[in-house]
Image 1 (cartoon, helix red, strand yellow):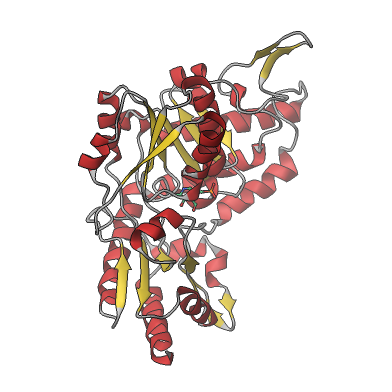
Image 2 (cartoon, rainbow, N blue to C red):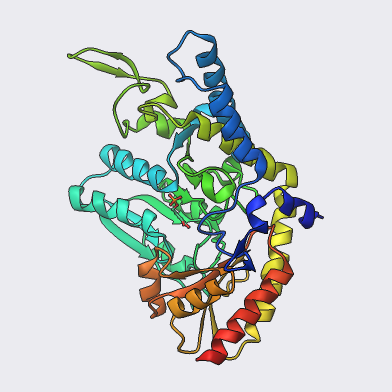
Length: 404
Ligand code: PLP
């Protein structure tokens, strides 16, 4: 059991007021708030351990390098990767997917080859593939879903052809909350000899992820969604795959030797980390991972499921509500519309009551098209939210509903 009141004290922003009302922060799928220890790690990093890494012989540079490499090991343990060489620091999920999209298609795909995505992907797992498709003539195929927001695995199996080269799907939908059966999705792809990329932006903050158990080739996530800083994220890749792929960007740090005639690229993971990495961000991300590990991922998952059940019960009782995403396996996200009230109106009026929710297409326009809507209101929860905050949300929605 988590002591929520004590935990909330770790997050100073949660006791802020907006428009003279207590902040009710329900936009955790967009970004999470930061515990004190993460902010302090950044401050201490810049005050005490700030020197460029990997290239300096001096004391500070070595300390900073050690801290960065220790952070990599923390990520390795967090994902249960076999080796820290399999952990590449990036700017976030988006950059990690762009890296794979670019390097994988360069190495493994030619015109007419196919990649399988799902209908519920975030734009960051669609557009990078479209960019490659336009350059290289590859084709995108899409796994459909049912009315509850579950991917149709029988349809998925039918999408494989002898041109399928990669499957790339999200672990948890940022709109529907659906927890996709990624272990099964991966196993099905492997039966066809096809590697898989999983977008873990919405899973890693909420559940235990074990990349060896999943047997996944690529797994990506963002620091800022898991209580860490912005501008840092992770690409996990199986060593044999990272070894095989060409670098994404060129520059300092990623080489072993350079002459005008020939450059030899560096070893893993440095081959994929051109330029000065965010070595303060990596240590702050590691601090965030230690923080959630300290709370226990099982405790976090249990707490968030309790909040989701409570919110679903309370919101379901509101007249005229339509909730999008009713899969039995669901993360703590509630997307909804009330009658004909526009999602922006709802979001703006809730904001005036101090309630932060997200409105719009949530960077998932193809999913909105499949649902036949333009957008939704989305409340997304973290373990630090309370049932009282959900009550405030419900009262707010009722108030807005009566205004229309
Ligand atoms: N994938 C999913 C499922 C997301 O929810 C998000 C962000 O909302 C992203 C990818 C992109 O993450 P970032 O903007 O941190 O790169």
